[in-house]
Image 1 (cartoon, rainbow, N blue to C red):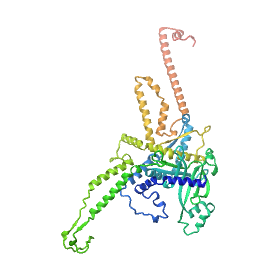
Image 2: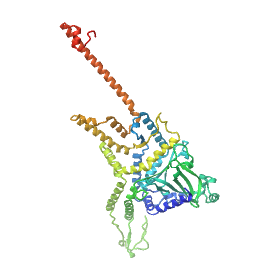
Image 3: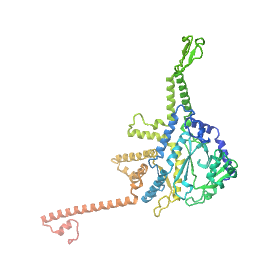
Length: 559
């Protein structure tokens, strides 16, 4: 993509967003996400930050955002347990124990790589942006930016105000633009002398080179002529499906060299989205009116309380000699003490507290705090826990589906590709090729969603078993092997704990053969007892052995 085209498209995106979206973000940052956004990032130094500014009088929304973001991380991408698995789409491969063990080891290695990286730290920041601003941007790159030399994965939750993106026909990320502010020294450090224009070199020696900031645009864009490139093998930077470059906004000069990515490294997540807008809206934007009202009410209550603590004093003009000094230990000389009185404000704190509590409850409900928090007594029955999880999954389920398609799916796919190119995945079993795979999420919330299906299978099987007393044919409907394997899959049972189809069939064949041998021995024993009984009876009756055999159905007397 040409530099002037990058600048033109960036300007169009910036102009489109300027106005209502950024005004909404300003309010959310001011009253819900203090010390975030442009609060100090756009300033030259932290000494310019007004650390003592007082905008927030009621912190209900601040704590609610933190609580909901932490709940999302714990339920979807928990740092303490594996939260996804890989599955083959072909059901026949699913029954191959070697293939399933390879797939499980692969998913384990990807999860370990995520745990070894800064993923848990950055995804936590992304969840806060998601709950607050309604939109979050997360990037994934290999450490050292070399996909062929494995040094680990690196993630970064980018400030949403710096990011602009274009959507493709599927509403996914087509191109990404980031607005940066860099000094001349920073550009020299990152791109070297050969990678910066002369105007920047001239500033390096100037006294303001360390403080004067320039707008730099970082662009990630698709290369349409490279979209069918084989990304499973090494490619040069300019042969990869996605290109990236830094350009100086003033003059549109390239900084450094053009690079490339095998996949789009930036993922944009949105809490909810309306048609016609690429930016998401959040619980904070929904509850913003109540948040502002609660802040104003607490501010007014503090003002009223200060009047009660230090009330206004009224005095007749003739009652005073000089000014009235109300400091502690002060001496006032007056003509008429009865001409001085304290004014009672008459504030109705009971009414204010009632309305404030209603506002705070509404804010907590907007952030699902009434569902996420335990009741007064922490002891809950298993039924209540299941009901609580079902309620949470109904409330957050749509958001989880969007997060899955916008962030988690492409993130795991890119992690797989990076590790595959770097040789960090186990070798495929002999005679097997990589088939289509699906991602299954195994965190508490996805598992709770799937447990409904597992419980439905149990109820159905129990119902058929009860009906079998009257209608034995009902049991013909059950494919017990598939039902139990599907339940194990829903419950997240690891492949190493289950036998493969061939091994199960071998065990069943051996069991059947053993049962047949036991039956044959039992039949032979019964036949021997019968012959012995017949022989004893014939001897007692004086019948010859040949006649006994004929009576037993034999034809050969010598047998």
